[in-house]
Figure (cartoon, rainbow, N blue to C red):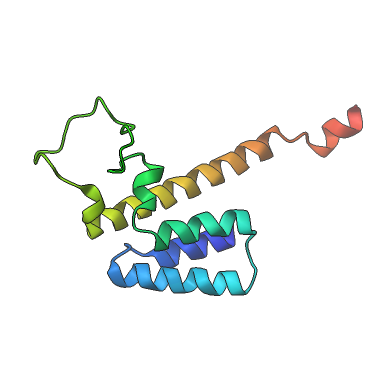
Length: 123
């Protein structure tokens, strides 16, 4: 959990400079082999491949049906979210913060569901 806290701190508001700092931090994390490849690679792809956030959110202009097909259209027809860098950084930050929240809540749930030592002795 402490590395996720560090990730949150490095992320900042995810301005253009923050994104560069975050990419550097992730590269150092990779060199230190702190995370498993299965956790590291998706994060690295999210930060380095501009289209990745839109693929995850299924808002891609690559011929896929959008995940939010019934949602209201943007005020400007033809708006392409993939071309807006600030929106991309906001989407990445939001996705990462929500993923961290989910991860934390899931860990707390597992702790609550874990049998206590006295319950195990009684069995």
